[in-house]
Length: 473
Image 1 (cartoon, helix red, strand yellow):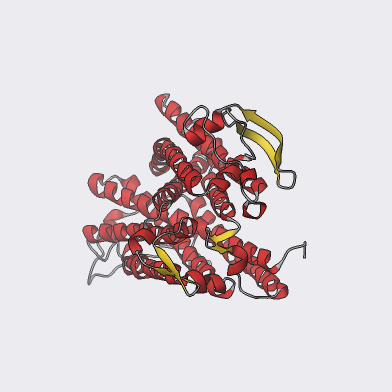
Image 2 (image 1 turned 90 degrees about the vertical axis):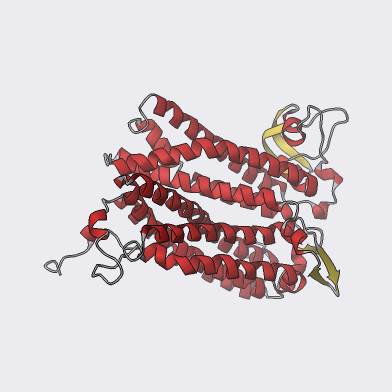
């Protein structure tokens, strides 16, 4: 089918399920920390808008958290079904790291999630804030273990190979491998940016429709401050990550830059546009800025990195995919910076909530963080090819011996089920977003508590106004 092999279908299937999964943890990481900030400010100021926003985003967090758990379980099973030889080879390291994620992060989240979702009127404010903090911490701990495992596959260290299997000899080196700090920081900040764009787009949508409430203004303002402060930090972290990649995976950097060979004594240009041709070993229609590639990649005017022609053909990743996935990520990052700077200018002019062109731009940018995150993930993982564990095991050697038909059938089923199940979930999240923040009756809620009668909270429910009355049947 379409000239694809069983190996390529297995890669597409893992990529498809991973692309769905990565969206939900990114939003839950950002929303969990955002909820902590909202609850802290509510306890300090008692400002109604903070508690309104907390309960508004708590419902959305609950749905996305559930979808993240479901999609993560499905994805993890593929290590045993589609990548059994990889599990046999590297399971001595990846298995424990994923187990640690369950034993620490998941148990921490599960232990406090119920208090966070249902305990507003059942426990004291201090304990409830603690529960929110522990859930937020759990999302970060989860990201830490997952990134440690994935980063080890890119820059493996702290191991020995015994009888054809990887055996850990230094867990500190395994976890804190050379690419881990940069990838973890880059991923967490990407999650915060994705959430800020989502929150900002929600605020912009409501302001454009005349829902000019204090809570709507507050979430718009907080999102734009986040964009203004964090986007430059992400650009700086991206530069550090790029330098680290150039050191440990130089062929990946050459591929994403469309860089084939050096000219003696000349700096590397930066290609703004081009179409890398893997067969002809050149980048067609290249639009280049002289020396800028050297300045960015080596921080020197005439610095050079190895071109792809210096690597064997079977060790080169697909430059065409990398070239454009990387530019999609960088391009969206520039648009995020523009959004943050524009918001600062409008805030100074006291027009942040009235400028309709800006609000439309903020709304359109809503999914940009998630698209950039996916583009970065494609750049990272496609750039690792042809390796599963860089320099140790090729992708072709890690796949299970399934036939084409069985992998094609499972991929087709995944596509149908995922689009139905998660399509419904995403539609429900957008429906919650459209409702906007509602006034939370703090005085009524505070009358509840241990041993007192009250209506249990329903964090995933829509506002009561949408529920049918008895007379309506």
